[in-house]
Length: 101
Image (cartoon, rainbow, N blue to C red):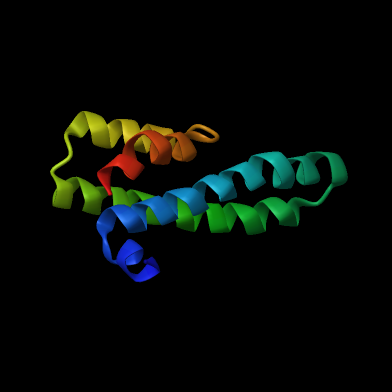
């Protein structure tokens, strides 16, 4: 099942969206407080870099899904917006991506 999951464009987008969502929550909920309340700026640097890489992968994967599944601009744009809101990618997965598989 995992092989089929990663072979489809929607499956890859779901995985990347999940990881990107987790990294965003960790960045906002753990790394930022460590930086500002515990004086540990390295936490934001490390988690921020990982989140940035995952965000870029999310965008590329979203473009791939838009092309292969012929998504409308509105659906693609709303999916992009979900990555800017905490927990947004989890909502995207539950309401859109799961149904597409």
